[in-house]
Length: 336
Figure 1 (cartoon, rainbow, N blue to C red):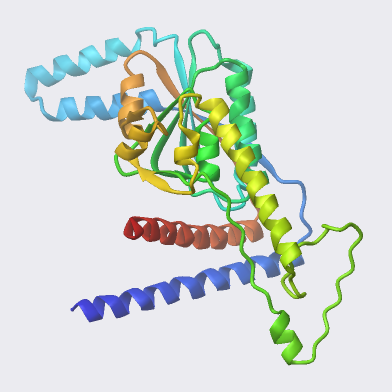
Figure 2 (cartoon, one colour):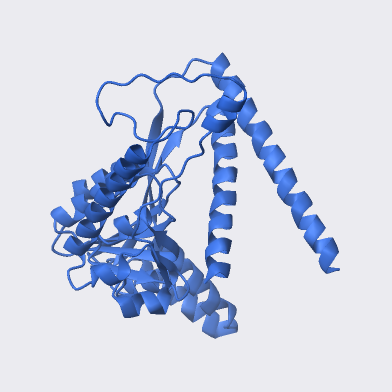
């Protein structure tokens, strides 16, 4: 039985990979056949408080019968006319890919919130999920959240699964970080890796020419011969980025022992709390339920309108991204 499940799992993974590859190729072909116009989108605002109230009332009514149910329904109709809380909580979701392509939507969502938020009573909650990625992409994503802090609007980041590396760079901006018991936090480090085909090319009598102007314009290369001098410079650049990363985190979480946590390690929920990486253990569901008691919750989401070609390509990219995310989470879980 175990062997059968294992074989089925391998078959399923291969099938998903093939389907994703076909979708990606189709998207590329359609893109090539159709000239791209400027992409436009729309901002969607959803009242989450109304949804939560509907669920609550549905449960209450289901447990009542006869006269008691009618009275409860009557009371609910009367309550709808009551004035809702003046305090508002704006909820933004950010599920980051390796290249942080979602930062464009985040930029528009933050701009929309800043246009209406009152820093004396309103609040922003970002439900964040990301294993990190490219430095410049997540640097910009963190800068978008910093706009909220600069406007003195209280910001809470909620992590249900993972906020590591660039994801934690974003999270540390918040006034408060809330994480689920087994959420992955940390990974304050820098990683770079690349293959080198120089020996293979040399064995096949293939020359590779690369011309540069500037001593360190290119330190390591995929096809050329790498030198110790180049490796040393590349390592120095990584160390410099790591220092910038540590400084950035320390600026926003001043009580953090940065040298103890900036080792590239990760921590799960409670251990992350012990290290000072987060402020509270709770799921995003519990967080929003608590806030809903004295505030109206609004989800703010910017969605791009994609053409058919882009939808196919986006679907393939999302599938591959989810596979990578799933792999990352499994590796981290079984590693520790």
